[in-house]
Amino acid sequence: MVNYKVADENLTDQGKEALYIAESKMPVTAKVIRERFQKKKPLNGIIVAGCLHITKETGNLARTLKAGGAEVYLCGSNPLSTQDDVAAALVQEDINVFAWHGNTDEEFYWCIRQCLDAKPNILIDDGADMIVTAHHEYEDLIKSGTIIACQEETTTGVKRFKAMDKQGVLKVPLFPVNDARCKNQFDNELGTGQGIVSAIYGMHVLFAGKNVVIAGYGHCSSGMALRARGLGANVIVTEVDPIKALQAKFAGYQVMPIEKALANADIILTATGCKHVISPTKENFNALKDGVILGNLGHFDIEVPTKEIYEYAKEIKPIRQNVEEITFPDGKRIYLLAKGRLANLVLSEGHPAEVMDMSFALQSLMSEYIVKNKEQLKPGMVDVPVEIDDRVGFLKLQSMGVEIDKLTKEQYNYIHGYEEGT
Ligand code: RBV
Image (cartoon, rainbow, N blue to C red; front, side, top):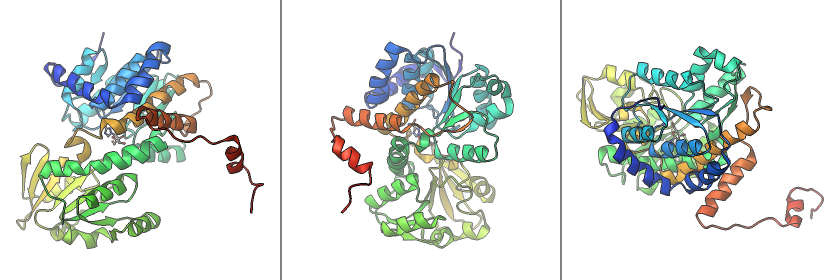
């Protein structure tokens, strides 16, 4: 029997169409791996719980895990990113889904608990909320070894687990899938980079000629800076890391402290993983230009000081779905995208299926790896094995019909040796 709570079961047909479109763009996850999983059933008897954005791409990951024999439970990793049609369609395929667009904080955690109540063996998280909840409220699942291991999809989640590991409170083997090359060099750079489109989609603005401030120059934000420049914007990067700041400078961007950049900014987009990138002071709010667009593409809604902006506002007027015109006491208007939550997920439908194909291929292969190696796994952070990362890269190239060279034995020995010199 399938367990679920979704917004509207009548949206199934629409959800099926969305899943179908994504499937054709995910040849590694939804074809190569799924077909092998279907035959070999490497996840037989395993319950997988995913706290992920409920999108057509995640739906295809769930289908692949199910094809491998797993029973799959899903809840959303962000209250505004759930695609209700996809959620409804997945229920029809016997995937247990607890997610609906716009759930409250209380409902959000209720959904997580529904998944944990199923006593899952593998947790796939996006932002760490489910695994942290398991540590706080479901100790039994950890102590009894019911949870074999966990996988984390995003930078913010990995950061939280690193902090737990450092303090010695991480009690499960944790694979930071985000840090695999096939994930962060593609999903983060290209997916978040293309997320610039969500700012356009939200406000119908022309980037050309605008001063666009990009906060951060990590994998996500450097992708955004590149796309904004490609659209003709004058891009200003803000950073706290000297090396990343240098990279931005040498890539040809202006680099300056955010407080200096605010007054001339037409669009400000954040993806730093930190909080209060614009610190919530009256001076900073007053410095903003009339009409400025504020958007965040990082995991949590505190990069842009959303709560404080709402408190400071004289008027908050929704002008389209998930875009608000906020009038400050001095009469100035600013435009806040997606209530400060991941605009790349909320305003468009998340990162494109073609790039999620690699991230979710890694998640699928890692679930298989965990089952195969369960006797050897120990609590703490463990890198995704290089062979799995390479395998996904190879399969993706193959799916695109791209061939590459192979090292000869002589070349292999040369680059792994030190004898041969001048
Ligand atoms: N992300 N998922 C999607 N289409 O399902 N789009 C983006 C999707 C993930 C991405 O991997 C990123 O690390 C995370 O969302 C941020 O929460």
